[in-house]
Image 1 (tube, rainbow, N blue to C red):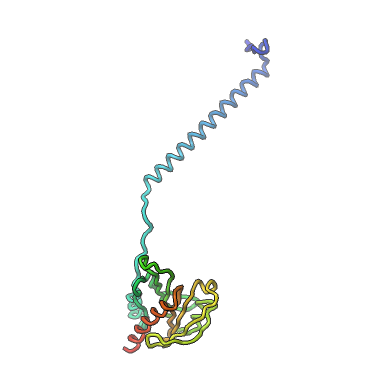
Image 2 (cartoon, rainbow, N blue to C red):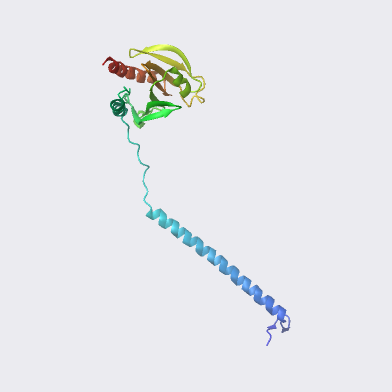
Length: 212
């Protein structure tokens, strides 16, 4: 028997019955979809919370200090060719000491940075470049120009002029000296006083090694 529609005062037609059932089904599906969405969001949040709780967290691994003098000595022993390096001066430490290459040149690289306690900023790099000359410095530091020479630690150093710090890779100071067939370059973002402190210390080491 057909359902009586109160507002119409008559049984509903087959089409009205079909429309009513279709509307009811659509409403049900819509409510189920919404419930499913909420349930999925809750499950996702729970998974995220579990991951955050389970996965171990901690500080990034510390960079261990390098030992430029030890690495340079090992290279000297292995190759028979003297490689020059210095320990970091006061308020500085070395974070890199490696055998390296640059644009066809073989070299030893040591990098020095200030300690956190010193409140200093910047960096200094040492390149002992095998079978090279001043041309290496001009290649390594774009825009650098060789200027006057200066005696530091008993050695003559070329003082490079850097007019465009950004072009030069953030380098503000550079000093270089020829040691036999090799070229030793000090460069970095630092003061002229500090770069000369590095050069004086390195020159003392070079003079000691070459005198043997």
